[in-house]
Image (cartoon, rainbow, N blue to C red):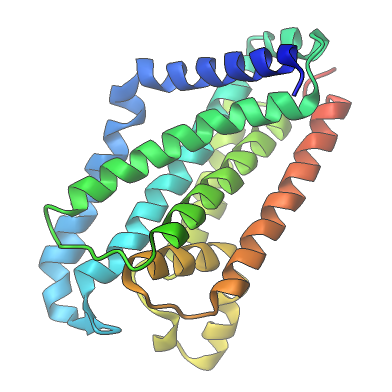
Length: 256
């Protein structure tokens, strides 16, 4: 990589990481508190009434999904809010006129989103250990699925920020798309419990494949083959990256 490009990448990445670390009380603490409430309510209070699922107690079963929820929301919101703020304040134009390739800008923002997503995920994982002993079946699958999911939703946040016209547009996607997909992605249940029709419907939910792979990394159980899960994840990453690259290259939502 060209030395100038490397400096640009490190500069954007450092700016994005410093941005959420400076306001860590707003960016890192709230997801941990929210997930802790899920652990208490669904794990300790409701879990014993539900019983075991796939041979594990209910608390252990839902922890991977809850960790993935925090990774998804943190990665998405970090890039969406940061890029839209830069666009709103008109300082994104400084990057566009600089001799920096489009892919460097994209990767720089992705580093910030992934850093925040994985940091929140690690914090939630640590908190979960106070409630249940979590086994680790495959650390490689765990890291790969968590990182790829963070990349995917960081790209989603960047796409939303490019197309958004107001700050209200940033909240529409998490409220009406991300939250339903996440809750219906098998966080609190196994799709094997669903009727055949709804099992088929669940296979059209991309979040289901991410949670499936991540849960396998912890517990060693899966509802669909890992090959399917990673095929879906990599396909979405590729498609979203290409779309974001084209839109950013053309200045869609930026140049008026």
